[in-house]
Amino acid sequence: MQKRIVSGMRPTGRMHLGHLHGALNNWKNLQEEYECFFFIADWHALTSEYANTKVIKGSVNEIVKDWISVGLDPLKSTFFVQSEIKEHTELHLVFSMITPLPWLERNPTYKEQLKELTQKDLYTYGFLGYPVLQAADILMYKANGVPVGEDQAPHVELTREIARRFNFLYQKELFPEPATLLAPTSRILGLDRRKMSKSYNNSIYLTDTDNDIRTAVSQMVTDPQRMRKTDPGNPDICNVFTFHQIYSPSETVNQINVECRNAGIGCVACKKMMAENLISALKPIRAKRAELDSHPDMVREIMESGNKRARSIASDTMAEVKAVIGI
Ligand code: TRP
Ligand code: SF4
Image (tube, rainbow, N blue to C red):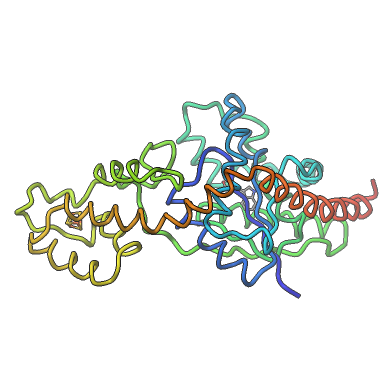
């Protein structure tokens, strides 16, 4: 039988190139090999956006359209919305009973986010329990693997610990321990060379127009040592060059690799070439996206059938859970 994987994303805005190269292209490959469940983690978004919920509702549909436009295929994979499957909250509650507090308090992601996101009050019960909810998402479908970035690895580890503890407490091998399928790390950075992220305002979105892309690329930070066109540059540390390596033909990459180092090409010209190649590469994605925008019924049907399929598995799992616990 095909192995099953589950992964989710929080709906906090449209998809950008960071998502594409950090997760979506990987998911796209995985759907050829695994039975895939990809979902919108709207309850998870609520753990940090509880005071600003508009963004959540507004991005659910947009994200699903972005997913399909890059080649995630609703005929191969199941898409669903976490809050539409009520069993997630139930299993979360069950797991919250058996998860020792110290496991959550020592979670590195938790500690880091408390330190970093100081503008939000994250000293809540729900935020501490974030990985418990994530364990419910994963174990609900008895996933064999979870494709995630490095930052999420501790959560999958916690999921395995919760599975083990549940199976031990109730003396039944109900939940398999899912493997972490680390996504290949993306070298793409944001316009300012920090990680591409909505909150840094340094992203290129899949739905950006040609001119948005040209403007964004013209603002990209290049080799910071290179002040003038007559200074030799170093493509190895230049984010524009990284984009060329992904989006430009190899002759162009080789040419820039040489001419940048001997000051034969200026950054303005180099960026212009890259922007046009990026625009061409995103064309088919944008075309698919336009098709989806003009068929809202199709998107709705895809979501409904995904939710239905997820719901039927989730209700079976919850029935097993209740039987095993004896409640
Ligand atoms: N925590 C994940 C993130 O921020 C999103 C997520 C929620 C998830 N539930 C999941 C990922 C289950 C994988 C599996 O990216
Ligand atoms: Fe980067 Fe291109 Fe400028 Fe070289 S010429 S520093 S690769 S933008």
